[in-house]
Length: 254
Ligand SMILES: Nc1ncnc2c1ncn2[C@@H]1O[C@H](COP(=O)(O)OP(=O)(O)OP(=O)(O)O)[C@@H](O)[C@H]1O
Image (cartoon, rainbow, N blue to C red; front, side, top):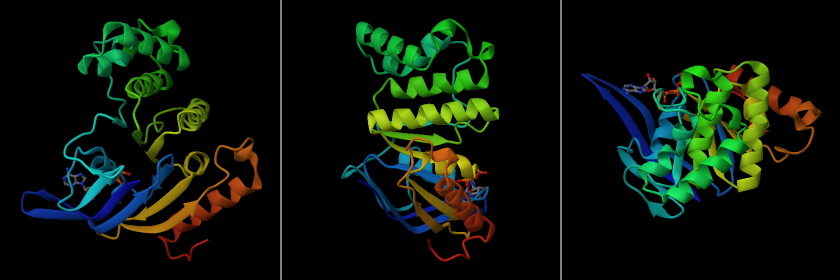
């Protein structure tokens, strides 16, 4: 279980302060695919930063699998909005970077990198540099790099937002497969209601109330089942999430 307990987070900028979280608590079960959705500025990225350890709460504590942690954890992977690829490294070098930094043995590094490059369909472009790749390919490189380290927690901040609709759908399916195959715990931020319902086993709708509030919590047990995107249940869930967002959480739970 990931336990966010009574956390506070206030950004200080000069004389002004932005209180994003105040006494905020949330549990995430192992193997859950949690999606955060809510209006711009409501605190979604901040929550990912707290979970990644890049930011520390100003009050309260976060435990991951029972352990309190300081700074970043080796087993947490974080995919940022802009992919975070190094332009001067080719696909192969970008994917193997994490293993190199952690001084993995050369053979392990080569095998794991090759396995993920193949899995992500990047074999043909493994010697290309990020500037020579499409947005979808870049995102797959970022995903491959995150997965080389066998993370137990995958945090993603709008990873698919820059992609065209079809590439986005293909990568959503890939993310779903990875989540199901590896039984990963994932937390994904998105602005897309369809993406939230397609990928989230639980969807949290956040609202910028200063501090941030959870205004809806939707369990989505059919996630990952064949044909879900075309089903009436999918349509119902997306309509419900949309209504929560539109009403700013003035709706009762469903
Ligand atoms: N480094 C910072 N210093 C001061 N204020 C910040 C900082 N980072 C974020 N904020 C403020 O904190 C609030 C939450 O920001 P956050 O980036 O978490 O929102 P978000 O929901 O991820 O937004 P978006 O959907 O636009 O990415 C916003 O009001 C933002 O302006």
